[in-house]
Amino acid sequence: MKITIIVGTRPEIIKMAPVIRELEKRQENYFILHTGQHYSYNLDRVFFEQLGLPPSKYNLEVGSGSPAKQTARILIGVEKVLQQESPDVVLVEGDTNSVLAGALAAVKLHIKVGHVEAGLRSYDKNMPEEINRMLTDHCSDYLFAPTEKAKEILLNEGILKEKIFVTGNTIVDTIYQNLEIARESGNTLGSLHLKPKQYFLVTVHRQENVDNRARFASILEGLGRVAAEFEMPVIYPIHPRSRKTMAEFGLQPRGLKLIEPIDFLSFLQLESSARLILTDSGGVQEEACILSVPCVTLRDNTERPETLEVGSNILAGAVPEKILKCLKTMLGRENNWRNPFGDGDAGERIARLIMGV
Ligand code: UD1
Ligand code: UDP
Image (cartoon, rainbow, N blue to C red):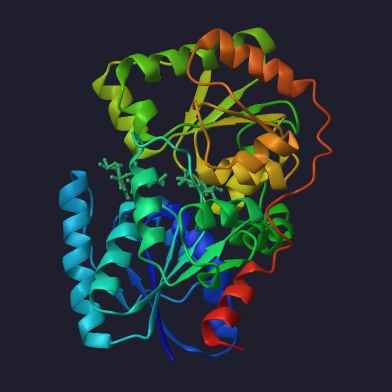
């Protein structure tokens, strides 16, 4: 059995790490194919180094571009590697262009596809990620659903139950495997002059938020009001996409401390000690929930409804007054919710299911 693991962006590397770790432990025949969608050191290599991952055997170096160009380059590059290597199974994780193009290239060559984090839906087709998720799920042979809810969604879309496996989300594994290491690995709070539970952490990078001037400006206004009213530092490790549009739109955020995107262990420190997290990231909504830190999601919908149900998260959209109101609601909540994303053994389960043992 030969396995190809496809990764392309920051969250895919972080969430695929437990599966890679397990295949490595079992000495299985696998290799990593990196599409090169993310290429900056702090969105890519730093995660391989910190999570102890072996280097990718191939890097397609597709880089940035319009959705069609990027997806097309990945399709062509992945096809070539798969023809050369003839794996039995290709594994993809999440909802990026690398995921859709990787799955499509494989299925066209009649190679089995396993989708890690299957069955998530925001029901908002304006998001590129929603299209990627739906299409990838429908061409996959193994659907690794993180929760029973995700399984239900797949069943309701007519996917055969024999193909669906509820494994938990691999992000729980990654957190459990790295939280202690993160706590012992330097003093990120100190170097940013922060005190535990006395700052807010922000990430905003989704296309629907930051590529729209009015919407991005409104979110930044809301965050500025939060900083002013609570007199607490608001730290924003800013994704290059957001940095670029912020400059293009001439937006000047008030009251926020912008820093470069940071490594995973430092980010875990920042997350776990934050008073509250405001984000539009999928992974960060989950991590806040798992780490018992309240979360305000700067979107109108989420494909992580489990976080709303357990009470760790609230949808605020992009209107400043609503952002403030939601933040106050979350500050008043007890953070004693349960983690709905599994027990931290998702990587092992996925490896066993693929290998059939
Ligand atoms: C992609 C995913 C998104 C995911 C995010 C994770 C799609 C459609 N979107 O968005 O779902 O949440 O990754 O972070 O696949 N750039 C750099 N360095 C890099 C990569 C990108 O500077 O290493 C800049 C470039 O200006 C580029 C922009 O960021 O144009 C956007 O990059 P892209 O890969 O197109 O999408 P993301 O916004 O990163
Ligand atoms: N992350 C990180 N450094 C940062 C910001 C985020 O290591 O400066 C990690 C975070 O812990 C999470 C992942 O990146 O595991 C989320 O990626 P992102 O928000 O880019 O993508 P999404 O989850 O929205 O697809």
